[in-house]
Length: 149
Image (cartoon, rainbow, N blue to C red; front, top):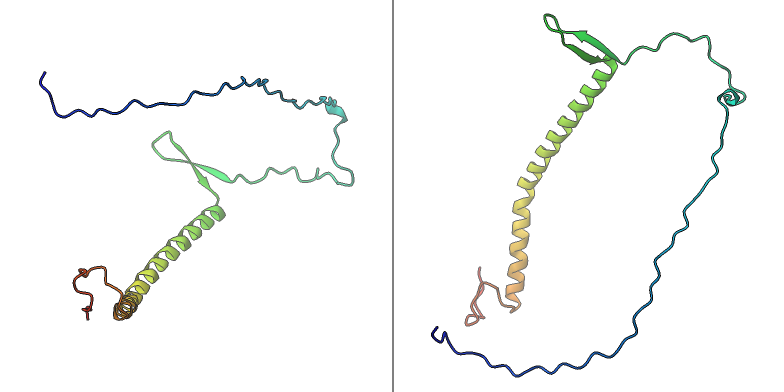
């Protein structure tokens, strides 16, 4: 193959010898595992807290939180929550959507009002710095005395 170009001849590198180091002796780590003695209690010995009256009078079943509704002409049963749960969920959803839309509208209005003020303030600050003799970034080095106005 032909010569592809000039080659670079680098001088050989002289690296120092590595000093002999003792081999480290590391033992495997050991852990103390927690232990406990299991406590066996017969189920007949368990009692409720003292000073509490048993409510044996209220043996009525609690109202179900979810009712089941059969869809006519199908074999499908659909769960339907209680009215209180549905009202709470719908109210929460309505309030969160209304708050989001209101905040978005308010933010857009604030941007529309404050953007011209910020732009004017930025122009005044920039004009003040260019008057003091500092160079404007957009200017060439040959025009130090001109300012944008």
